[in-house]
Image (cartoon, rainbow, N blue to C red):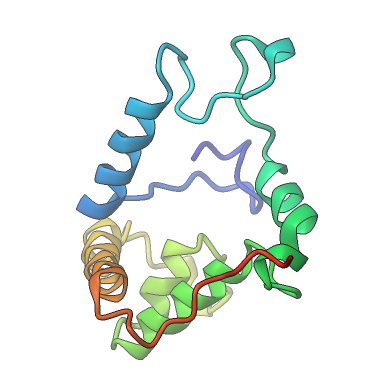
Length: 147
């Protein structure tokens, strides 16, 4: 992510886990002829990408039907960070994954990229997500559309 696009103004390398690569490949296959992985569905934006606020807008518009009041997509960052630290991934590595600025005095001297550690952590998180998604769902209540 180039510095000019990052919230904190610092460029950020995000290693993709095999799960993330697989999901992107599936999204690319669904994007048909578009040059965008997440193409706009609007005819007016013939060769445009979806609006970055589309997920927020879609959730807000359908929150009652989905039964997810109070949820925002940013909550997924908190969930991932909490799971990763709970799995034993050091908080510093999670901080690097989230591209948070480290204000510790030592950080001024530490110029390590943490790419290897981020990759290992995200691969571990990807395996955890796969196990959650593929586990027994007999005790999961599906979202139901209100009648």
